[in-house]
Length: 126
Image (cartoon, rainbow, N blue to C red; front, top):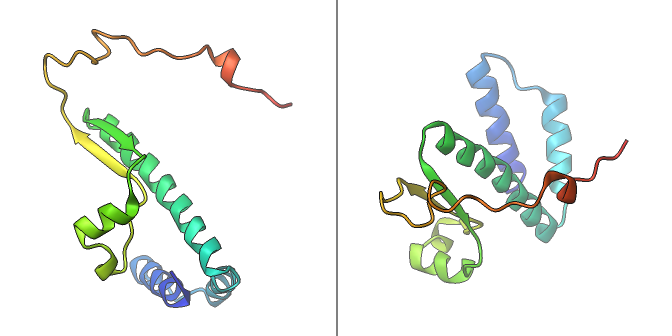
């Protein structure tokens, strides 16, 4: 992700909205991206993926689809298997989507979700 990507996004945004590119915004975003070392930029992009992935999971729930985020996989192995590196891509998170089997032993109707009480995990700061 570099200055060219920033420009492409701003160009698309301007086109969709029927307006000129906001040069001040473009300059700010370009400076933000170019001012980060490659590794820091990569970490920032991964965090952006998680923001979008949260919306994906929410959309699945709205559509009454079961979805499960997964980590604990080897991105290098998955990238190799899927041919992602050749396309300039890398895996960050996996998401499984579908419908549970009728006899799913782990369905909440058979095995209620176990959660700590909110008071035990949420700290309110005033």
